[in-house]
Length: 162
Image (tube, rainbow, N blue to C red; front, side, top):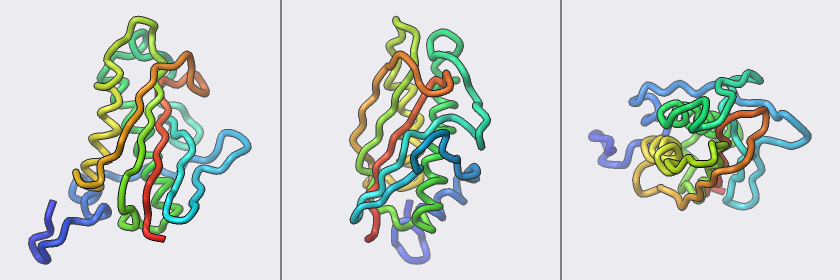
């Protein structure tokens, strides 16, 4: 996306507004940890879950209780929580210079194989907010369980203005 007034790429904050994305309240830790830590120009986020506040929005496994589209919806909520956490830490998502790494952990039924389609919900949202040129590497894993019986946990590392 290019801002026609300046021929500069649109900012992440502007993209959020253009996409009509309202970030949820910043999640609070569910244990003895913090949601974000910055060291130098890297911002590490704790695993983000599909919760709003302390309320789970999905409980169960992808491929059993949830289909691919519901898994994508849960992944999107977790990724929105990541964006909300990063914005709180940085003051503005415009300080993100690169999405370095995305990890998507999916609690799935044993024979589920569409992991990439579910994880694409996180990758697509980050691409839409930060731009194609800031797209990250990614790991997607099917796991036995995720905290609280939720179907997805998303982990993100951002490069930021120091």
